[in-house]
Image (cartoon, rainbow, N blue to C red):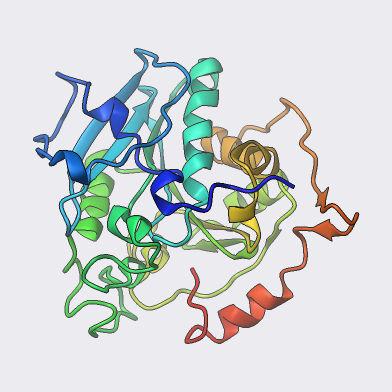
Length: 302
């Protein structure tokens, strides 16, 4: 079994190697980022004129936050990765999704995909769930069940990262949202997202599981408050141990299905399991992850 590079500084970080060289395509004012704050990250294999790259703002520690836009249709999909900085497996997945859709651009006919590859760059840099202020960004949204606290923020949208997410939501008005997390190995949903969750679960080896809306979470805000079908795609607890190609084999079809929903993916069949050197199957035992979810104080999730 291949392993992802253990160094945080070498993992799947924001693709600023594109953003810093793109000119004339920003809809928002570009933030000037010192060189030491720029993540060095693998770029997409090719650059297509059909892909727009924007830097929308910066984090608490002034790391750039960038996003991608593919397609020009009216059906808008917003995909977010790494809002928890220690749950980074979603970042290579969404970059591979962008690469795949560059090569299969017909799938975006009538659609627009907005991708936020790294929602919490400071947390990713520090291998921390929280942002540089120690705030859980996925508890910092305005919801009925919101709790103001030192860990969740003294007020909703107290953090620049969550304000940026909301700015993108207001700007693009998505028809559905997918946020990638670890490690609960299921497809969760908020708001009117059950059908979409079932649609995605058919394309991967994860089951639909209603985990419940957490206080001030993105799902509570977009799903329950705004009424946007919102999916929390919880990858397996082993996700960061897999190379990006295998992550794509496991979850790529599910991401494509979210983009082309309600159309059906009939492109290829992915393998659904892998074994370690001893022949023992790895990936599907998520009982420890479920226990962690039930006791969020031990291992926070979602």
